[in-house]
Image 1 (tube, rainbow, N blue to C red):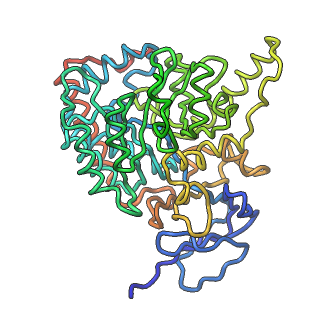
Image 2 (tube, rainbow, N blue to C red; image 1 turned 60 degrees about the vertical axis):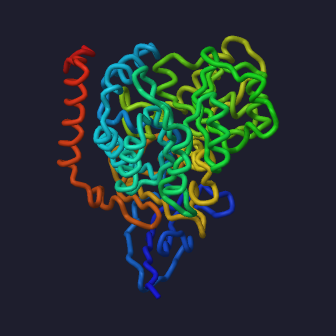
Length: 441
């Protein structure tokens, strides 16, 4: 019988995000194999590998609830874009049309590794460029090798030259390979409003992702039929939706994700603020990064943006004279959106999102000894408002360390960089698209 592997996070400030598991000013977290075994003030485990957590906060791994990982090598290609269709023309019609499986692998691996480095242990990978089974396999291989937990959403490629003839029937092959009990990397459907594809995904018990901007699409009456909408649905953006649509989504108990920086970048949202609309209708919205073409793998930036944007939007409404304006957002609600709510959206609330004995050991440890962080007076406020990706010291996914002492484990960063640069340069050459180093100036 194999020996149980134990790891003990010792002497840190513990933020559990579980209402039934108390936070600890100073405490320990014991991991056995891939699961959290115990949380307490003084745990004795003589045979455990001890990680000194003094001067840190130990907390659940962050969950990026919406990210197009296949755009990894296009980082900051369009930092100022505010036209959705101009964006699609570049990333899909111009560059995306030339993607090879190795480009899919390079981009997805880069995004996954950068996410781990920033304390993101789970990503909902919204792939609207599943050009062929080989492209999908390359993306899944990259996610598996990186060590991140992922829900890879297979979706039709956006460019006009792509064939989507392999969908939705390829989902059955993928589900058999990836969606076993306890699989760290799983597959869902990026289905938009194609009910035939939704039905294929539901037969395979998959999560279904739909990007939804209210003035660009509508939910027809067929979506109100019993059983069509439910907890298996993830609706992203959800900006400028009419009240009857919010009632339909809320009544069905769907999952909602928003992208604070991206929604602002493209001008998708208004001062009703989609995150707040979801909350007002009894939903629990999660947050995602969305784009490498403007941003990168940093969920702390999304938490900062969510806090500021919600307060700005609600105060504008109050100053405008509206009655019954929702209360300002709290740092607790922001952190829930980046952990607990993301787990729910991925269909993984039973496994991740909180530090709870019995759940998967997806844990991060953030240092609080930086001059921009200490002294710690409010733990959650410190996480949301002060900590950054450079403060992420240790990252564990399913009980396996992926970063420790501020250094990624088992990652050849030089090789990763060379592959990303080679992929980007190939795509620019093949497409004829030209960039300028100081274009934004």
